[in-house]
Image (cartoon, rainbow, N blue to C red; front, side, top):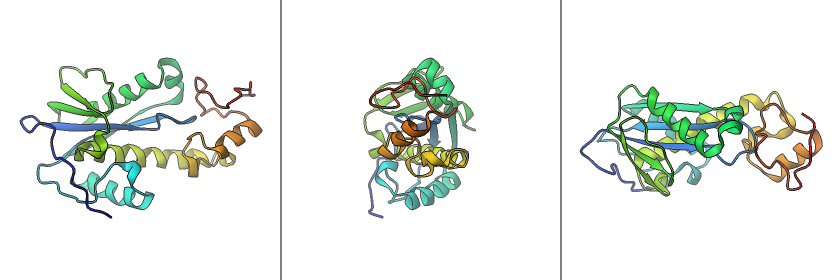
Length: 203
């Protein structure tokens, strides 16, 4: 892996957690989010935005993060609630759920992206492409991605014709072709545009 120099803190005075989500653009499955507090001396040069890593690298780093982090947690919002409250609100809720489960309460949150709703009385900052800039957000991106991929491989066994073990629910040509051929599963997000033609499909 290429060495990456990510910033350790957005601010150094308060106990800080990084937050990120995975699965926002998928046609099926939940959205996952992670919150991670890293120790001040955490220094792993290969740590990077999960999208810039391959599966093997992400899994290796997941083990390191889960072992070395001060604490970490993952929040999940399923496809049914995504359809009810929309994907932006679901992504934010998943982050709130992750923060809520942390063994230590952070005093400051740094969020990947440009939208967030304040969690309780904890101050926060939104950082566009923060997962490529701050170590704790990069760590959160890796945990959210790997935990979600693990879940999608499990439900792939129920509906193997959609190839979720490969596309993870994202709108690939292969995934859309399967939807056109077989219709929607109970795991698909009904509020999303499943096909370009948005055909009415049997449930």
